[in-house]
Image (cartoon, rainbow, N blue to C red; front, side, top):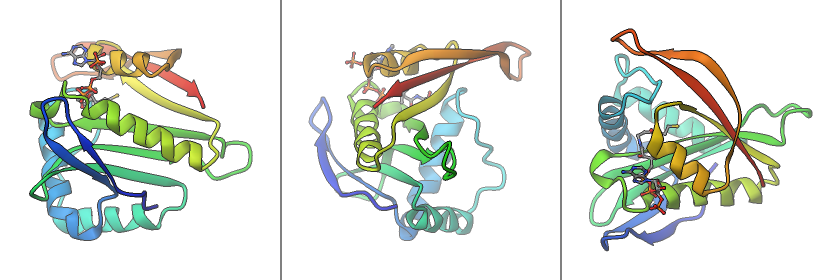
Length: 182
Ligand SMILES: CC(C)(COP(=O)(O)OP(=O)(O)OC[C@H]1O[C@@H](n2cnc3c(N)ncnc32)[C@H](O)[C@@H]1OP(=O)(O)O)[C@@H](O)C(=O)NCCC(=O)NCCS
């Protein structure tokens, strides 16, 4: 689903446009996706099979998807994506359609400037407009920055799955499940 465009200004003055990425943004979206998955140990997506063509298909489908939305932050004066949030109904079936899950990431050099907060607000706005009742997400237990962002927005810990994530060095992290009633 497409969301309405919105201009925002980051803490140090950089302007961004929040909008749903379109098919033609596939090269920028792929670059963003490769950057954040390389930088952060806390994202689950695999990048091996990624191509611009596959990205085009993903972006086309998310525009057509009436159960979800993607919102990207495009830096002013270019097509570069600095952050992205994806929010989607858990399922469209009657007993589950009041719930949505979200995932968010910001490129390292744009973190700590208020972009994660702006994207989370935009996702919540979409969810409220869609009459969703609750937003849910899961986070690595040692991901302090993400936990602080969610706590700041009023998300509560609803549970945890022990040792859900295993790093290459053999260390484990619990999956912390958080949620917020809208
Ligand atoms: C988690 C993430 C989305 C936050 O985005 P961001 O743009 O840095 O967020 P903001 O600048 O809006 O900061 C939001 C809050 O995070 C916390 N925060 C920011 N920088 C922090 C830091 N260096 N250490 C700890 N907490 C920090 C603060 O509570 C901050 O609120 P405040 O500015 O009012 O104090 C971003 O760090 C990220 O993409 N990380 C890698 C991918 C990831 O972990 N995604 C989440 C998966 S669940």
